[in-house]
Length: 152
Image (tube, rainbow, N blue to C red; front, top):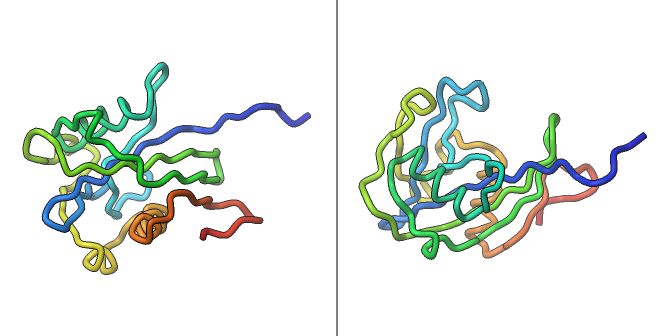
């Protein structure tokens, strides 16, 4: 019997913008899409809202404090993977305290700033590349991995 309800996993992604560039971490030692660049990101924890999760993940990964009021929701993606279904929230901020650095060397090789044009030449997580392109075009919502739905 098919289970009713949902087991969607919420995740957050933070686009830190500075001088026309976006901050990325290079994934290593994680076992998931190592060798690609990723936005600071992570899962929403139990009893945590998405804004708090976005600020927490940014602090954990790149060592900066983003005020909750500075986080602007720019895209949501409902994403189906082989293992589960995700609801991804992409936030953007041009405001934070501190200088970004690799705060999780056990998960990331380094951090780097790229323009949209420079991103085209970088190994980037596929669904994040799609989301960033849609954000650039002002599209607020997309779906990924569903057989019957195409990304706008």
